[in-house]
Amino acid sequence: MGDRAMQQSSNRFLSLWIQVVVGTLVTLQSMAMSAALPSSLAQPERAPKPVAPETLACPTDLPTLTSLLIRDLPSYANRVSQRARRRVKSPIPAVHVLLAGRPELVPLSLSTYSEGLKNTPEPLQQIFLTTLERQYTDRRVTDLQSYHWLFLTETPSGWRLAMMFSRLGHTTPNAPLSPPRDTSDGVIAQAVEEWLRDCRSGVIRS
Image (cartoon, rainbow, N blue to C red; front, side):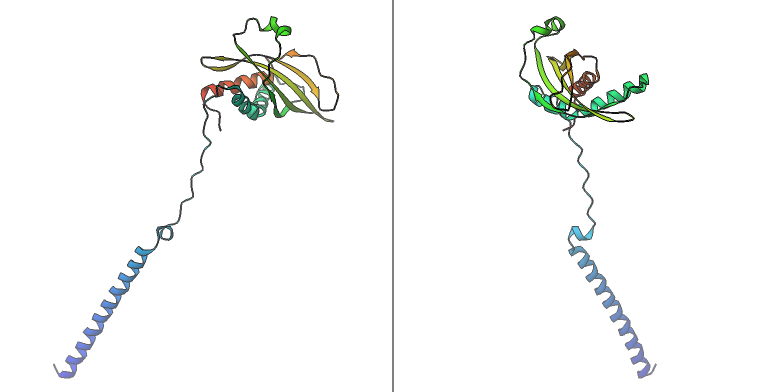
């Protein structure tokens, strides 16, 4: 082989060797840059999982229990009312409980109602609350305001409803109230009982 051919062969070998070295350097540099990237850039962030509301232990003190009860009472009462209407297929227009509020815990004398309460366990705790209700008919919408007198007793397993009285009124000023009547089997009382049952079971959400 002549000197010229040997020189050409050597030049081709050197050119191939340079290409291999340069390619290796580029690969190493790319790997180093990827390793140096922050983890927040190297991988997309995952969306945080939604935090589910925590369940609460049923309160033993009456003020805390009452505040949670009036918060949930409209939804409980409306479910009780819907189930009752589906069961009996009542033609009477449905009454929807919009809100509950104005709780009072100052007890009143039980002398007027001693006959109805004589067989209830002691001691009894009294709660007064108001519900705003709305009734839809074909021609009008009627807003009603009801006043409820609840008697609760605390048992070893938790709070229970012993009896309830209610008075029905209207939202118009100076409108007369109906006389107190025993509503222990009514929609609001059933809703209270269901809420207390859920509270004792520890499924009330915060």
